[in-house]
Structure formats: C-alpha cells, structure tokens
Image (tube, rainbow, N blue to C red; front, side, top):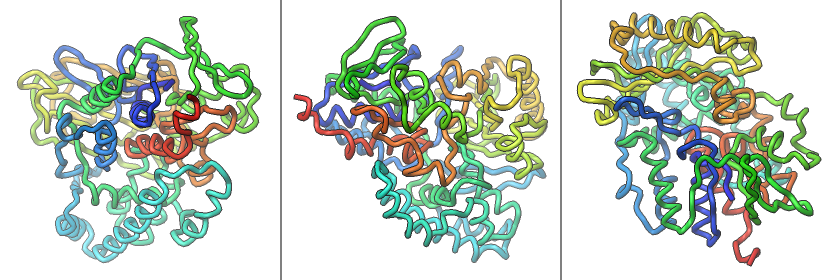
Length: 489
C-alpha cells in the first residue's frame, strides 16, 4: 500500500511492482500528482508544483523497469537558458550547460571571478560525485552508515553553508547570488544549508535542465500508466486516516471513509511529520515524537500565483529568477524572523515558451512563486493573499510583463495554508524538513521507519530530500531496505 501519489509514491509503486509486489496507491485528491498536481482552467494548464526536470536518467530507469522507454512516452525538451536570472537593477545572467558560454557570462558580469568560478564548478563536481552518485540512493538506517561518510564530509567541508562555499571562490555579489540560490528551489536557506547542495550546479551542467511537453503532469500520467500496466492501481479520492498496526508491524490502512485495507507493507509518501503525528495514533513513538517534530526546522512556505494572459510575452524565458533588492535580509525574514516582507524574489514559470499547447491560441500560461514564511509566522493568509498577489502583479508589470493586470484572464493562488489543508503539509512547509546538516542523511527521518516494522517513507522529508531527483531517489532507496516480496508469500 502506497499512501500518496507524488513523484516519490508513484516511483515507489513502480519499483515495488517490478519486484513482484501487488501495489495500490491511495491518493487524497481527485487526481494523482501530489505537489505535481495539474490545474486546468478555461483552456490553460498549470503544473501546480515541480516544473524543472534534471537527472532524467532516473525516469529512464523507471520506464526500463517496466520494459519500456521513457522517450517513447514523454518528450523532454532541453532548456537554454536553464534560467534567466534578473537582478533588481535589470542586470540579467543566463545559465546553461555550455562551459564556454558560462565562462563568457561570468566574464561579462565579473571578469575577475572567471578563474574562481571554474574552481567552484570543479568543487561542485566533486561534491556531486560523492553526495549524489555515491550516496543519493543508499539508506542511512544505522548510525554506522553516517560514520562511514564522515571523513568524506569533513574533506568536502560540508559543515559550510552553500553561500559560504560560493563566497570562497567568487567575490562579485551578483555572481554569489547566481551560484547560491539553488537551495531555495528545495526549501533550503543558502546561508544555513550544508554545502553538499552545491552539487546542484554540476548536476544541472552534467544532465541539463529539461521540461516536459504537456507539462510535468505528462510525466505523472506516464507513471500512472506504468503502474496500471503492471496490473496495479491508483485510487483517487481515497484519503488515509490511519496506518493500522498489529504486533509492531503494519497491518494495513484505514481510509477516512472507514474502509480498512489490509497490507503487509506500507509506504508513506505523505508528509513525514503528518505521517508520524496523525497516521499512527495508537503507537507510542520513541524516535519521531510530537515534541521532536515540533522542534525540527522546516522549509519555507510558498505563495504561488497561477495566471493566464490573453496575450503572449515572447521575450520572457521558460524559467526566470527575478531577484528583489535584498537577498540575505529577505531570506532571514523568511526563515528566521518568519515575517512576510513587502519585497520578494520570484521564480517565474512560462511553460508556453516551450509548449504553446498549454494555453489557448495567442495566450500564455504562467505561475509566479514567492518563498514566504511557513505557518509558524503570523501571516493571516485569508486577508493577505489578495494584497500579496496584487503586489506581485504590480512588480511583474513594472519589470517583465507590461500591462499585466489588464491582460490576466484566469487566476488562482496557493498559500502555505493551502499546503497545510490540501496537501497535509506540516506547518504548510513547501518542502518538509529544512535540509540543514543535522537534518540530512542519518539525521533525517529514515526511509525504513524506526517506529513500525514494514513501514517505509519516501518523499521530500526523508533521505536524500526534496526536489524531483531527490524525491525519486527516495524510492530507489527502497530497493535496499524493503525485503523481497517472496518473504511475505
């Protein structure tokens, strides 16, 4: 039984199905995807969450387990640029995977930092080799697993933050921002998360950044077809209220509607804190107690404005990072003070730059994502959502989308409160636990539950963490920790 149909849950179902398990995926919402749900409004198609596909070999691997080819099912398009980064004064910096082109971009912005930039990329490559290729798919079930990698982490100086590591190599303040913002895409504060996450820079250069024709939802649909092709099923409108336990082992799940479904193995792709706090009501937890979960550090929240325009903006790239006047101070407002600032930085997604079919003819599909505090802040989103949306609209109109408000024909917003209520995300956090060093690897909730036998965890809150490659990799870990189906025969 798999609880939740996000990338982690669907990948887990595929992998377990390939090993001979009979699998049912249970989804609370009316369609699969979880954070990768798809909103369709008046001919506009909006990916609700993940839009950036890296490490596509992970998808190739899932399709190959079913004797199929991913490329025959879903078309990926490489992005160039990966992102256009726009600073508050209008300066732009485009990133891609071409070493010469990136060297030229750095030389234009900060010629004195070219050599340092190349040393940074080499350091990122080394961290990528260890942090992703060697450790991204292995379990950290025992403390000895962590002890074995400590020498490597010390050698890589993983105790540094991402921003501190970047600053060691380059001095230009714009370049420091351009090389350190990546943790914000997985819920991390660049000034506090471990420098292991600088591996993202090399990961993107190595495999590129891609988008799917039809949107990320096309990948979700393809994964569901793999599951049903294995003879297994995905049930929507099926919210799990409890994981049932007998003699210390899972015995199945009970749905909110009352139905009990027996199972010998349960994999939870639900939020980790939600799983432990709400889905195991009869269990005395020794490791992940309510107190420990309450005191943990959680990722930022997200404010997302989905909107469609009756005109097109061809000069806007598929992925844009629009930076406000503050960087460190704004991030501190979000993560430390948990204060909703008047200024913001945005990720602007325009998928119709690549796939015009995601909007009616002559129109554009967008979403603007702003990192905001999670629900430990004092923001009344019922009152603040529309003023905040309007502030974002005014900013976009002044910068990259002229006359925006008069061009918008469909609109929808999501706040941290929606993440809490719709996705059952603890504190409305966008990416579960924050990926600081002492909440990574062995210190993170384990893929094999410490509380109940034959309960397993996938998704952003467990190892290796958030982001599409990370979440799919949480399912790869199950190959090691879930016993063969024959054990239960």
